[in-house]
Length: 225
Image (cartoon, rainbow, N blue to C red; front, side):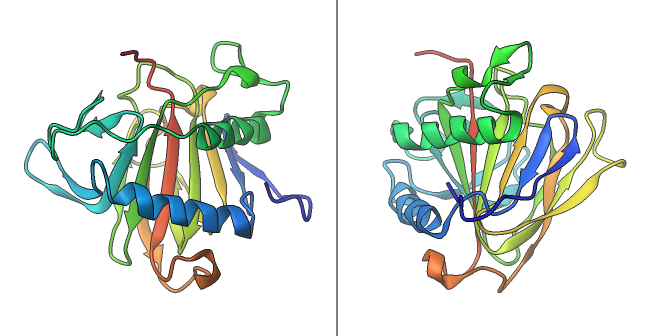
C-alpha cells in the first residue's frame, strides 16, 4: 500500500477509522481494471431494484456472494440467475491489510477476534456517476459483525457517518477521496451511513477512471455453502 509518507488518519467514531491515501496510484489503476472486468459478469453490473419498486441510482456488481435486498445468495436470481464471480484472494488480502491499518496488526475487533483472522468473503462494487447517491442505511444483512472495509477510487464524495440508533443526527460528514480507506467495526459496526453527494471532476484520470466514483466494500457474511 502507499508508503511514500506517513498517512494522516482520523477516528471518526469508536471503531470507525478514515485513512486518506491508503491506496497508491498503481493499486488504484489495478482496481479500476479489475472492476471493469467484474462489471461484465458472469453477473453484470446493474441498478438494484428495491422490494418496494424503487431503483438505486448506484450501479452494483457483487463478488463471492450476491447481495439482493436484503439477503445474500450465491446466485443472482434477481438479475440473470448466474453464480457471481469469486472474490479474488488478493482483494481479500487487501481487506485484511486494511483492517490491520485501522486497528493495528496485533489488534482485535468486535468480540476479541484478532485482526489476523479477518477474512472477507464478499465484496460489493458500487459505481456512482455524478448524480448518484446512497441514503442512510445500516449494513446488517451479514451474520457476522466483522468490520466493513470501504475503498474509494475516482471522484471524491461526501460520506455521512452517523449513529447506531437512527438515520438522523448526530452524524459526521467526511470527504473520501481517491485512494482513501474507511473501516468501521466494533461499536460502530452498525452505524447508519450514506453518500449524499459526489464531487464531480475531483478524480485523477491517471487511475484509469475518467469520471465517477468506484466504492469497493469488503465484508464477512458469516455464511457458508
